[in-house]
Length: 295
Image (cartoon, rainbow, N blue to C red; front, side):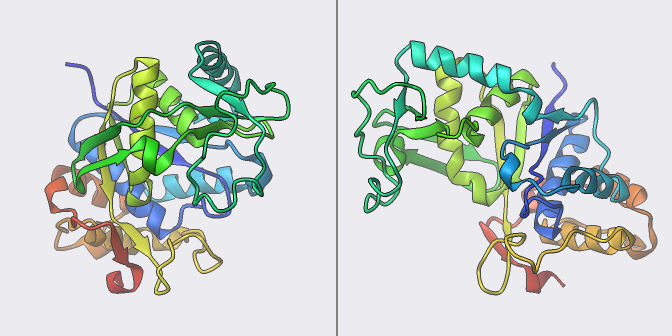
């Protein structure tokens, strides 16, 4: 049996600092990997240079180390894999499964994010255009280990989606499917805000002929106003000297047991105990948790 491989994914954008919400998701991924005897791989999803914060990558790595979340193997940066994305995109265009789209945001106003197909058969030139993937009117679903069954009619609820932006930047959906397959990822553990991205990734996995990982979407930690934690100035990076108490809070958010002397242990000791007692069935079966309730 192959060793399970999990992915720890981080984006060095303003909302991508390792804040408490991302700590909960990272901790779940890390503990699930360790409990299964698997590898926890690290990927920096630096696909959007204009939004990347200077020093964010180093800050994320330092926080992971300070909190005892040690990864296996080499760090992968998506910014160094553009050639691989380009090759796959060329194949999709050559097969007719993708096409160039020159529609402006103004032209698409009023369609509630569902692309009406203006450029689908227009044969637009690739230059100065976004690239969209043809989407069938078909339901794509999966059984999430926490959230249960989830599916979407891609044609009606999503429609043809962008896999490369007009400015040449590659879309998250395309890059993660390519990289998950390349890294041999067997299990994806992440926040429930990405639940509705999964059917698009299932479709891409089918098109590219790659294996489908298992999925586990943990509850999203939200602020009192209902926004995702990390989307505003109210979510600063995690302090190094608060590693143990914040790991304890994160374990509570995940419904996990704690050792009696948890408050006095070092992060590595706490994580070792938590990995031996990890039980994904105890994770709250909800999409959101209020941050204030976890203090």
